[in-house]
Picture (cartoon, rainbow, N blue to C red):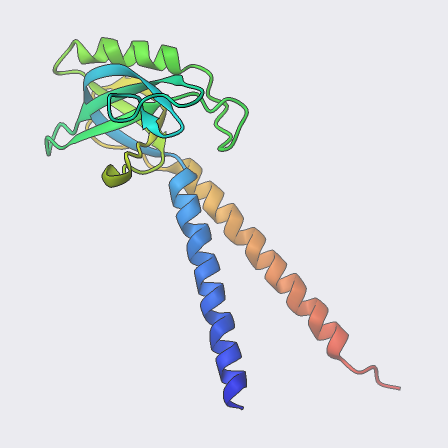
Length: 182
């Protein structure tokens, strides 16, 4: 009986871990918005190890990556965003206009009072030099971030699909376990 409790506990922990992993993945890949002031832009040459410099010489194929430096207008906290095309690969933002976004950001950086609304996905992890990727930028006059309609509809639809699957499976197992009356 003790081994049965251990198996049930293990399965419960596995289920919680799986749900947590899915939730973190969705939080990483779903779009988020920030209202910022663009303070500068730059282009860096990177390879699979990160930015190429004296300590990290190029040792394979390289590419240029745009970076956009920003500042929160209220808290004055700085944030650096990556601006790189996703192309046809995952995540499917189908972003092919990183040069245009960089040009807009450069224009916004010339006006110290211009606010920009950016849409991005990802996290800033300083110790690993990971930057969130901008998918869109536009000028704004409001300091409030828009309501995340896409995320709300997507997560609501996903919840409905999971509930539908759970109810269907429950009904199927219930029918299978019923003994027909003769």
